[in-house]
Length: 189
Image 1 (cartoon, rainbow, N blue to C red):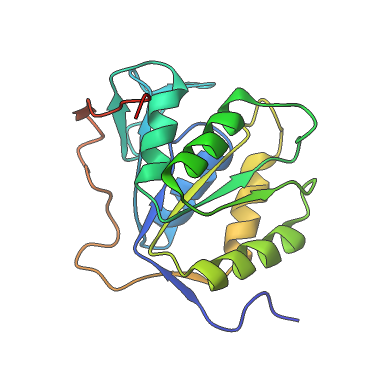
Image 2: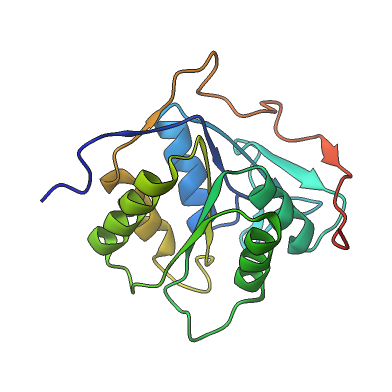
């Protein structure tokens, strides 16, 4: 049985670029000609050092994840959160859920332990229901859940996501490498 009959056109994939689920999403977008960008902490921090410049991410003014997470959720129609370790709480995942609730953005939490077909079916159903033009993908880092990068890559390949028609689908918003700094976050609102 196919995952979905109709392709899901996306204008944008939004992700922060951290090693793991987020980087897999950006790589998927780049490989499929889908515009991509995201927000990350000041200095482009990642568990493998710095987020490479080939990923179009925009640094926020703070080093911590809260501002970037809120901006990534706000910049997207929906969020998919990959969390194969739900019993082991994650501050970042808590921030993602709180940001989705605060902005009233639909979200899907995938908690299977690396079952790509099961997760792909859930993502396809979620996209069918929500019909977003922009998708935020986030989740565990490679250090927290070894193999998450390959799992997210496999899930996204199984879901028939295609680039929506646009003037420049293959580049992000800031192709110069994300040198722009954003100063709009206000967690009290």
